Length: 253
Ligand code: MLT
Image (cartoon, rainbow, N blue to C red; front, side, top):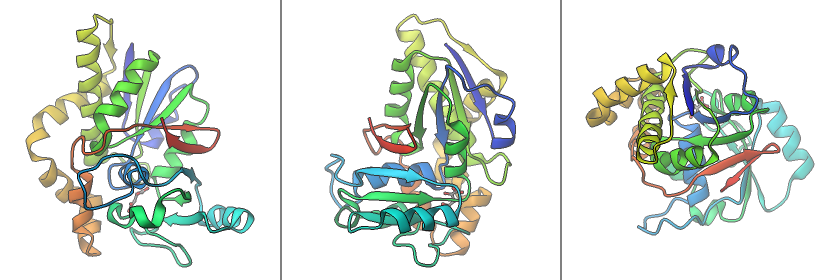
């Protein structure tokens, strides 16, 4: 298994996704909020997914509004962010704790965010696509391992730039894959990017909250009063399920 990490969409352009598994990471907050949306955020220890039925990621606000115009109904919600905040006429923004069970259960979300949904759309063409975050890292790594394809861990970054939060989560996914390969005697090879991400994660794994708070995206969330979101995004393995992105739609696996 060849395990590669690309740190931003600009770098992704040099990769060939054909035949590979890709996991997209946007820790603050798209791929984290996707996981919470499937759970249905609630004040309970019950981790059974009781949230959204499916999520349709689209790149632009116009596309989101147009699709909403076409498939509008009681079971459709328009969700996502621009500049960290809920866009006008949207039902929900992008804070994990707004994807409440009683709001999202059974619903289809039309979802657009600045970087995360763009990275998902760029991944189309890969053999298998999933989403990862700190909150569902182990489950994501497990499905990537089970697929058995070479892996690209694709950090969404910000405006084509590398970010601390996505790179450190990528390192966690690489570490988990390496452990699984070693346990089952599966040969593996790491790209230099995968090695860098894993080393960065190992060096910082005890200070993830601090790391995310000092990240540029973390600073932006703090500036708009959404510091709580960072705490929701840093809970490693809080949620025990993985997703798949296929035919334009994200569902639970
Ligand atoms: C993104 O896609 O860039 C993020 O989700 C941004 C955010 O949540 O504020």
